[in-house]
Image 1 (cartoon, rainbow, N blue to C red):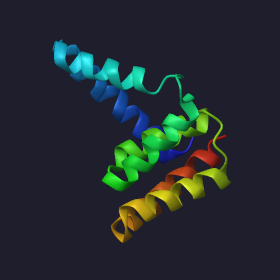
Image 2: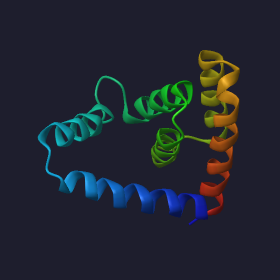
Image 3: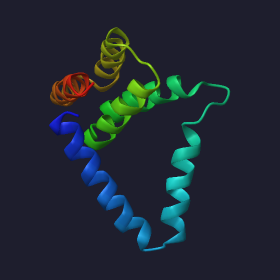
Amino acid sequence: MGKLLDDFNAYRDKMNQKILAADITAIKRFYAVDTLTYQDGALPAKIKEMLGLVASMALRCDDCIRYHLQKCRQEGVTREEFFEIFSVALTVGGSIVIPHLRRAVEFLEDMETAK
């Protein structure tokens, strides 16, 4: 796997284990709602992940961007589709999204080399 991908996943897994080990019902329920939200429903999971990626970029959350990049890739999003998603995010979020767009492309390239 790519270094960015490995580092991100290792940190995310480690911290999620610590957070969930605190055994706080509200936190566990929020995590469960988040998981349920992105499952197939009236909208397929692929579309929901694409929406999540746009929202994450517009809200400028690099961790969320990396998470949704991975999930989108797992759902079969192509490089061409990624760049259209980036275009929507940039239009919605404005020029302040550009630094996050740069990091998203860097992470996407890291995932592509990790095949």
